[in-house]
Image (cartoon, rainbow, N blue to C red; front, side, top):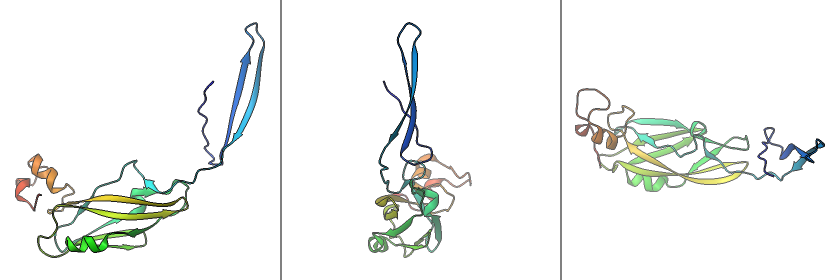
Length: 169
């Protein structure tokens, strides 16, 4: 016997019915309720996978909302902290959090290698989860990273070959 009941109310209480037949027309149905201790889950990516975020061109900002990319499966709110801000600064990236908003800014000239890793600690009722988010260069701010453009020709259809726009590493 196998069953896969759901816990839509998120109470840890599962209800099912067991039906037994004797082969001669006799049947008995017995409701069964099983209580399972709730496992507290840490924050996770909303779409099932960690997003890649694009870096703006130099001296520009780009903002992301943490709650649009990650969720607390327990239904609570998230808080985040940046774990590698110092290492990012050495690459020419300023990363800061203001509540739910993550701001990314490229500073300096030519320091950003085209991709980097942002290390976030996400905290919610279910605990803390360390997540690595890829940061990819988007020198022309068209929403397509430079590496993809260099391989794809003219994905933003601006008439300029993508490999001549920005840096590609």
